[in-house]
Image 1 (tube, rainbow, N blue to C red):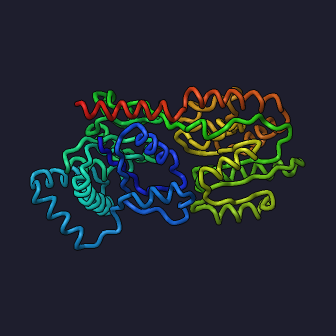
Image 2: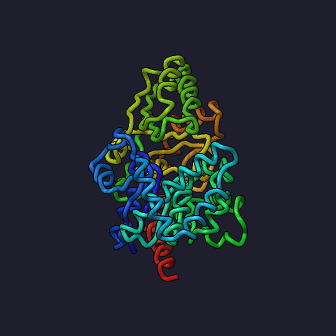
Amino acid sequence: MRIGYLTNHYPRATDTFIQREVAALRTRGFEVRTFSVRRAGSEHEVSPQVATERRATHYLLPAGLIRILKANAAAFIRGPRCYLAVLALALRTRRPGLGGLALQMAYFQEAVLLSLELRRQGITHVHNHGGDNSGTVTLLAATLTQLGYSMTIHGPHIFFDPTHWALREKLHHARFIACISYYCRSQLMLFSDPEDWHRLKMVRCGIDVERYPYADVRKQVTQLFYAGRLATEKGLPVLFESLCMLQARGYDLRLTLAGDGEDRKKLEQLARELGINQRLAFAGYLGQEQVREHLQQSDIFVLPSFAEGVPVSLMEAMACGVPVLSTYVGGIAELVETERTGLLVPAGDSNALSEAIVRYFDDFELRQRVSRLARQQIVTGFNLDGEVGRLAELFLATAAD
């Protein structure tokens, strides 16, 4: 099979799970070509692997007016009925209002550009990660080229506006939708027709556990670690408030934040206002090797999110044996069982978060127990090889249809 993988921005420092999946499929003999609507910024080029993927990826944008007009003419001449039918599908699944119409017409143009490239490269199946705007482009381009398509849905943002993202139509036309969690699957069931539920398949994100060697916890707790985007939904102000409380109580802790995003300046300002800026290190985007090195030097991994799917960053920490602390949102509880493989607290509760950190700080046996059980949880339930195997079987089944 020659599979086209499409995302909105690829490759990024934050989508290592997609890069690993693509590499694992190629190892299994699939020919995977990567496509992206836009090029990620240079700050995401954090490793030679990312640079290699960047050079091999075909980007739809930017595209000049002449190129777009030629692409539309070619698509129309090839199949006028199909072209008009896909245009009608785009109009039918658009968001209300002029803004919704303008966005959908932009997605339609991107789909036309993609459809020509899919034909040129001889792609036999299209797979999308995300399901949002790049998912809409996938739906339209695959229909225009009369190819089968599938998607991996993560959430949670796409579930905030299911009508805008046309989840019902995307599932109805797809060969299958890979859901990374039961939470994700249930949300798609909520926003789709029951007769299409058989297309919802469980394929979790996973990691190569051999790349994340396990180490026993240390006696003393000093270093906290966070890896992810610096964005509102990650709940970092709550973590900062917790650190401020702990500092007032005499706890000597340091926090390293790996990642970047639109909230970085606000978070740096908040840290100064709370008087904890000397305890923080903003490391920016890091490569996989650098993240692993930080994990090996950390005592607690903290993810205080307001909204999540099933975070791969938690899997990496658990595989390394770093005790994890997160919140009861999205699919996190399918990964972390509180008191057994980590600790979970209500989202937005800085008091509960600080008390959980104190529990880890004071209870060496608790950290030791959750560390060992968490590693086993990743080995048996979130192993990249097993999950890619399930995805490969689904791809092969679509080829046999």
